[in-house]
Length: 331
Image (cartoon, rainbow, N blue to C red; front, side, top):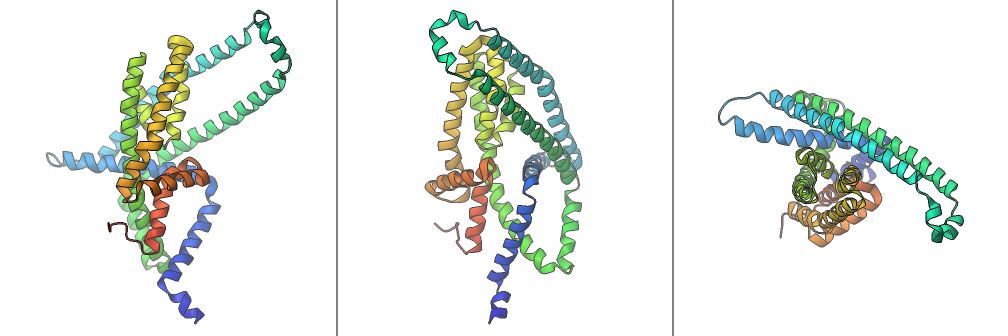
């Protein structure tokens, strides 16, 4: 009886799924690197396929050439953004610190009683510690992005070779495990692909609205800024907020606190539009899930998995629904 239960197809699926979850748990420290690599590889591969389909109508072009050109463009734009805007960000940060240190509190005697009750030294130490932690996190993210670009480049260049290598496990001693992992992978990639397509549309809309808003505020170099916003917008919701830091520093240099306020208001409107209108609606359309359930899934997955939950939550739910036999194609 127990043996028959173990040999059931549904039982094997659940067992292998649990094994996969355990493996992912032990690799959780590298989760950001894996997801970034997959995200970049999927994005570049989609662009490469689109360009190839258009160009091959006129002249035959090798896929590797298109891949190299795409990564060269990414490298050039990233280098330009780093060389152009990192010094500005550093200089403005130093300027803000100097301005804060030069404030003469004697001129504001009416707030002295309040200041006397505040342990400024304590809060300064907390701020310094938080700054070190933040710098460490930023450094880790920069390293992960760099490694993800390198890994995704090698994968896209040797995609066919990598796929053929993985297929060899189909005829190995772990063929049964491979069969189910392959099934899980195809099911997850199908739903994840739909989510990525929706996120790319969201990134394009965010970038377009941001460029219009920044041009009205008076920003220059809109092409480079647009590229930065587009790349960050591929990270759901959080990307828009991350872009706030360099934009506020540049706005402060251009026109002080007033320009910073304009940028914060603009980003706040875009963030609200993405979070409560664009994201749930597009995800629902791509996955055939009701908007209400899509919204709930996004909230719950973000709570448990953080920012990445906004990308992974819906594919995981669709995958589980597929496992238990729920057909989302039926109206």
